[in-house]
Image 1 (tube, rainbow, N blue to C red):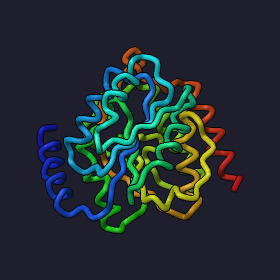
Image 2 (image 1 turned 90 degrees about the vertical axis):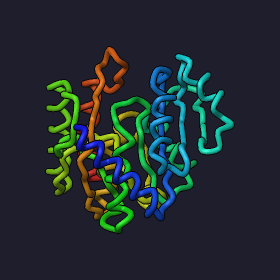
Image 3 (image 1 turned 90 degrees about the horizontal axis):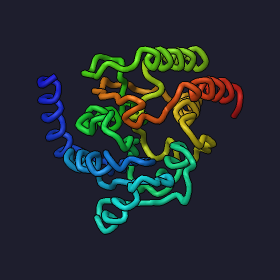
Image 4 (image 1 turned 45 degrees about the vertical axis):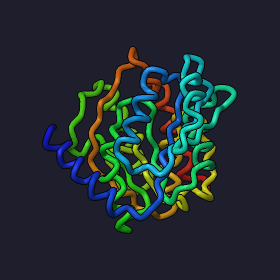
Length: 247
């Protein structure tokens, strides 16, 4: 693992020198008082984000007190939902507020490591694809996830591949990175975790071939605050089917 992160450190230095596109990091958050400041620190530590857009989705655990204290930070753009609407709704708000050429979705916990930003950004910077997904199943270092969680992820990805003639390995990944124009005119109806299949479906229906890269993953347990539940899986399946046959 140390070799992996040594390599990432080298890539960060190179990307800092060669990056030409403005990067907006979008962080939707809901009741993340324990991790929010840590993830902001990690995003800043990579030195690649030109702006960090944080959308608080009606937190009630003290997260807002942290954000109020950070409002004067020049690299942060903080938006508050007056009540909890769901991850999809928070992301849509973040997309509208972002001004970057490239948008990167970052969860507010510590499951996904910002040191992977260079490998995520490189295919976009080089014009290989306008959309890049960070896959947890392509060989990067990871904490072993719950078995049934993995099965659900792989089943949803398989359904995506069958319906949309794709070869993705991780449709449900948080790390979705894309040029602004991909989402600019996209109508996203999802309010919760069904954002992942809806966004993926609409990208693939545009004829865009999503480029995947391996990332590290440090999954947390439900007792540690993980919010997605098994009940979100059938909603995701229905979302994939619905948008396969609907414009």
